[in-house]
Length: 242
Image (tube, one colour):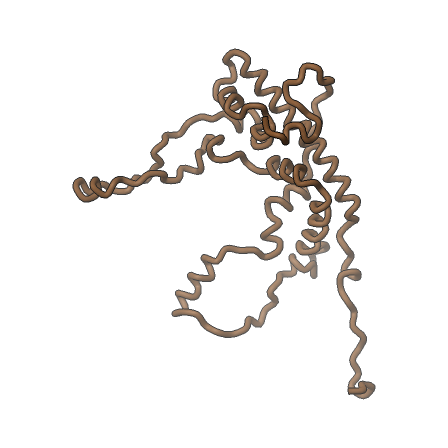
């Protein structure tokens, strides 16, 4: 069993544990946290380099010069119609994120992300995983396959566990047993295995979201424009000493 399964005092399958009501959805979801984890890098302007490389090739190679436009958009800075800029929002949420423990950050990240490809039905979006041997290409003219070697298999993790799939697989006692249960939920005690794992993941996510909301409150709120911008004194040439 992973050590993280007991990090919040929650042990799946414990018969002595006190039964509680299932946490409500709003107790284990935060729109700010979801946006921060999934889109935080793009808020700060992080982009891929492929488009820039293609643009340079189309222009005949590297060229010099300085752009005459702002490097940041109004949405990032918080001008005009944008009340709170994305950069300021990232600063505020980053301060709250840093207050959490490493285990809390890890579990919250799993809660908002899909499980690994091996535990999903799409198997990594159908990427090619095998090339024909050189001898086959030389002798038979074999073409590189357009489909993966492994056929599509039903995992059932998304259907049975939903958003909690990645976290449930992480904190459960046996990920393989849970995967087998999701593939055939009507067999034997598989439904109980799924229920225990799902409940443990939801309870852990609820506890971690309480810590996250407390950290957000402690990190105050995004600063107002007047607090973020420095108003320099008016420059008057006649009164200048230099």
